[in-house]
Length: 293
Image (cartoon, rainbow, N blue to C red; front, side):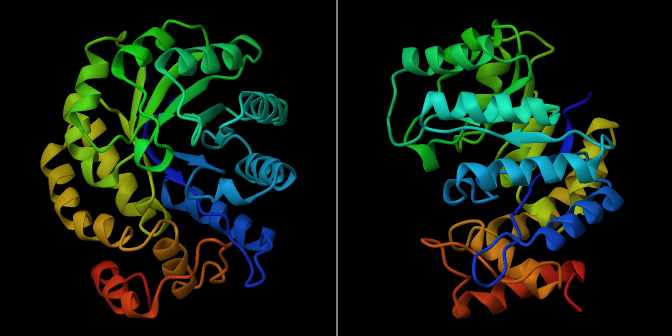
């Protein structure tokens, strides 16, 4: 199982009343399979994991695994600020057949570095599914340092990290402290090209939700050594990376997917659909790729 390339941080399609749209989810998954996406992350930040209850959360993971049917890796988002809840979700995702689990650092609690180490060590010791750490301090108010990552990398079953601290050089710091086979994935689309140079081998991408072919080619160009094409695509994609965070993600991405006819414009409070005054700019940036007819 290779965890590299363009791995989409999948939105959770919702009807206008906020209920999960299972038919639209199936359609998105088939679209990604056809577009060359290298992996799927259901129930990450972009999937609004914070507003789905545990049953819904696990249903989305299970449905994703069923539809993907082993064609590409499914990395289930199973993190929580409760160690017990994160363990439960990870165990359930393992039973469902997830290829790996992505566990965000416990948010809101503000654990120490030793608390982070104990959190992940406990989950790894009670599961056998591969674990990918996820560091995103702008969302969690909790930053897992490179030294803590290095300690965790020595625990059996912890295979890698999605790094989204906002500083691409953190990838360099981690790479210098871990073994060569430890997987580093970008969690910042705009910084992925730089992270590649520091040792990342893929991205868990928001942009891949709307430009799956382009993100797949971008990542594959780097992995195959075609750096000129990789750089060309990176330049063209940067305005899209930027505009998909013009408001809190995933509001711009979900609204754009609704304009593309892929999903309804459903999202759960406290998030709202993209503000009307931002919509023209979002369309303009992304329509350089001709995605909205």
